[in-house]
Image (tube, rainbow, N blue to C red):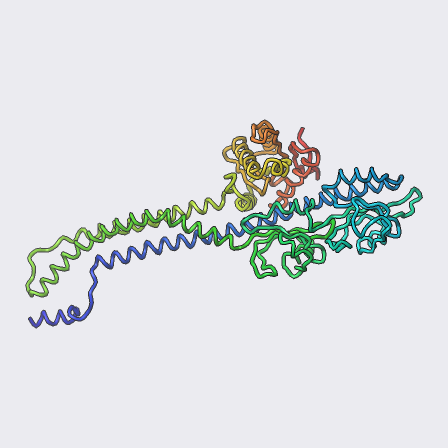
Length: 540
């Protein structure tokens, strides 16, 4: 018995709290499974955050640049209208009825039309405005600047005699001898509904995204909250870059302390800065939805896995428990057992436990791989996205794999959106994407480049074959039956590596120049960039 007491004292059987092997195994496996799921969730959220951040920045940049281009077109249209009126007025006085008719035809552009002499006195104005009747001398900074410069002018916003915030678009008047006779001008009331804010308001969504515009001094001239018009936001980092004639995107904190993903662009005619931005909180909302989706997907597998582990732990513990009971009985009785328990099942059960844990890890990894694949795919068209395009282009050039790049753009896509709505516009994008996949080869890769722009990488193909594929696609799109009931056309530009450049930016620029020429020459055509002749040629 002395031997028994010594052994018992060493093992601490009477003083230490003990745990069953089954409990330890269940706790260990549960911890491992939960840790694996946690790692998968954290990795997924990080990937999702990075992808959404890149997408929001890229989308807002492209939209701001598009709005800057559209704004330039609208302003040029206004200036052309003033030029036409100035030309007619310089020949002979315009009868009031004719001026009224001209204003009625252009009231979508201007709130009022006026003709002033070289001293700034109003000779004619339509419609009549209190405080600015014929015979009234204009004293606004815009009128003085128009008289001083004697040239075309789009003024800075100013407060008129009516208390409105006004933009003046003017053109000079000269007689047949070239003597300055005054100017014609069209006014835009920035606080009222006008052609500019109607165009810019299209981006105001319920998710907090919106567009705003500042003049060259950094003062707001368009904002969803009209009370802020005229407020200076020149210290905003995005505004500073836009007014420095830069186009780009960045994560910024505005004057109210709110964080946004902002895209900014410079409008060259007026020097305005245009910013399109989305709250960074959108990423947190998306991550919360992703977390719910992951938990909903993984929970059944987690419960099944825990059930399997419980059974395995029970089998392992039962086998080892019998061995422990035999050993304990031997120590307590001081007698040697003549029956040796089976221990060969120990290795098998541990292997099964390992396999079960590995199965859980595989399920999580499979989900992670699926998520990583999803972030490379454009959600609307199911084509590869811009991020995947940049990676593939760099990889092929790095490995010196010849290819041809086709850039294409849906002609008049904004008109489709304006006429049929964004839902129908999305259907057109999906239809064109499907046609791209049908008309290209199995090894070719199709991408959504941005907005209504797409790209195709054609591998192991000379320019002739690439042109053939591009033309086949163009004809197929033009022949599509689509929900708009009107013909959809595309313009395409082609460049090849290494013929047209050795860097990604060179190839993309070459294809973009070819695409630009396709649009200039009337759209619905394919243009091939030929660097050897420093020119681009349109395919017949």
